[in-house]
Length: 101
Image 1 (cartoon, rainbow, N blue to C red):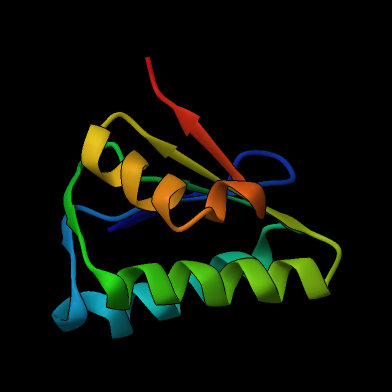
Image 2 (cartoon, rainbow, N blue to C red):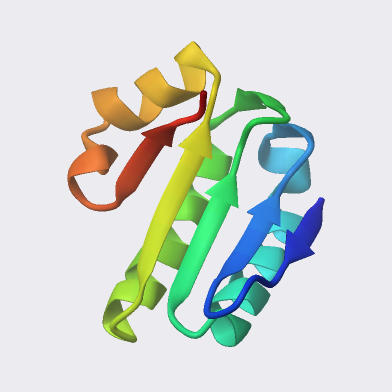
């Protein structure tokens, strides 16, 4: 998992799977990004091939923390199934879900 810091924004890029086994490290990375990202965090899921409910829960927690601080979360994905998870759960109504080209 990597984290870049473009001006005013943190970018978190988890790799391959985001399941219960990986959530603690992912949670730390996301909360670090929230703390350092000047209010804007992009979650780049293009390298991800699996996202389970534990991973979704961390995304929602970070969105809530950002919202409380006046920030915002953007999720970037090119995976149909992962995009569908956010849409079925209607999370795209709470934060931006962007389809990568």
